[in-house]
Image 1 (cartoon, rainbow, N blue to C red):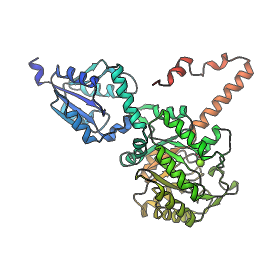
Image 2: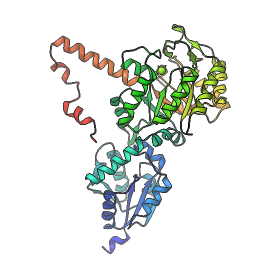
Image 3: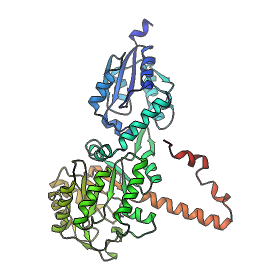
Image 4: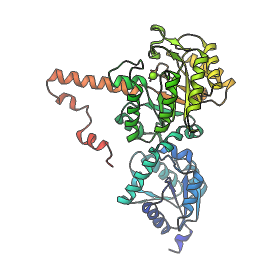
Length: 436
Ligand code: SPV
Ligand code: MG
């Protein structure tokens, strides 16, 4: 053991609670040498679905209380490149759960880096028992609580270069938004937030998107999604309705833990924006819509809830100047963000708006919904100063044709064998949902 004293062992944690699994890793690490512990930064933790519930500084303080550690340092990225370059540890030690996807990509990259100079990975059997399971569940539950969930969107706006939200309309689609992670050439990618679309919430009930599904029913959808997820929610509030009703709905959504409502500057019978001018649609006056925004801002009780104003001028072909004039007035009235919408395939008018808006307003978050202008990448939006991109209906639109084809084929073949190959297995579907 004497020689080992000089060896350097590195491990990285991204937890807010230390349990026996973590202590076990440290004990194992000590057998190989002196131990440096990394605390994964906030910036990296939020990409890793380990959204922190305590600050980075508090995590460092917490980790410093663990016996047997020489130092605690911040690991800025999910990948270990910087740390390995600087520390050149002899060993990197980790729970063996990182042998499985999606973390496998991280392990493979660490292995490559260590191989360059003869460093080694030590995989410690991952500790799973009732106690560690309970602590993990507690952490998830904490994130699902309204006070944590609500502030998460604002926090992400300060950390993420661009926020990706996906449409959800049920517990099951919520789980997809919550759990889907892909390994993009070693980078783990996932959605940051969920969009509760009026179009998809209505469609799932077989109803048109005309503010027919009442708020109580829409809140029920929110509640079902909240029961099984932790990610922040952006709620599609349609026109926001009457000012006298809007203030109640702001309070309700805020109390539930929703992070933001987006309301559009239309009035009367609302039709889906993607109809554009093919159907009669009426834009609200700037004065009335500003009054609605201000009333909502006065009604909310915390600083964490956001009211985002959606400008429909391009949809209704009222021109760029009108769009800009309205956006700036809505910000003045207290809007926490601007969503600019377009139904053109060509993104030029969206880019032009973003450029012109950003020349005047550098900070107010900008939101886009690229259903029509879907060739634009998140990186391009980011370059134009966009902060949130919402994939507003893609889960509904992918599920519906798949279900319809299955129904048709069962009718065609008078049995289900022919469709079975493209179905999720019964085993997978019953193990999809975590039990408490
Ligand atoms: C929704 O998803 O309901 C929206 C976005 O409001 S759009 O359908 O493009 O109008
Ligand atoms: Mg809508």
